Image (tube, rainbow, N blue to C red; front, side, top):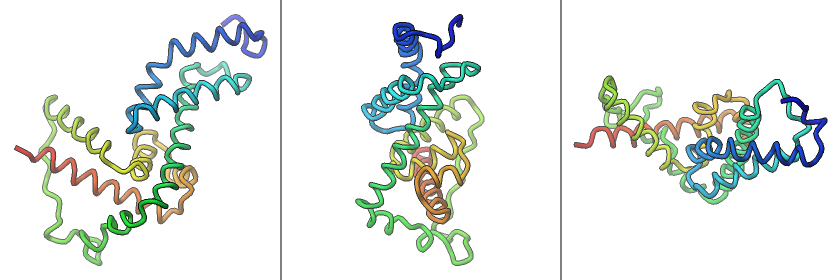
Length: 199
C-alpha cells in the first residue's frame, strides 16, 4: 500500500476499512460461526471485530496482513465471549457442573476407568468417507457441548492457546481449567462414540 495507515486522512481510512469489510467478512464469519453455537452471536463478534479494528487502526502493524490482524482481534473477542459464558454459566448451572463431575462415576480411585465405563474402540478413520464421517460427528458433538465447556476445548485445540493463557482468559484456576477440559473431553468422547457406532 502506498500510504501508511497513520498518514491517511479520514476518507482514506474509511475506504480502507470498507475494503476490509468487503474482503474479510466472509472468512471471519465462517471462523466465528464454527466456534460459537448461535450464528447471531458469531455475527455480533465479527461486527465487534471491525469496530475494534476501526478504533485501533493506528495500532495496525503493516508488516502483518490485514487478514491476520483482523483474525487476531476476532480471537480476542471469542476469548471474551467464552469468559463471559463461563462466568454466567457458573452462576446458572452449578447443579449441572456438580452432576457432571465424572470422577466418581467413570473412574476408580487409581484414575483408571471402571469396567462398565471403559470406552469402546472407535472405528479407524482410514478412508476419506470415514474421515468425513468422523469430522461431522466431531462438529455435531462440539455444538452439543455447553458453551462454558466448549470454550476450553476451542481455545486449547482450535485456537492453540496454552493452559495458562486459557486460565487467564476464562478467569479460572488451573484445577478448574483441567476439570473443565476433562469434562468436555468425556462428553465429546461419549457423543462421538455414540454417533459412530450407530448402525
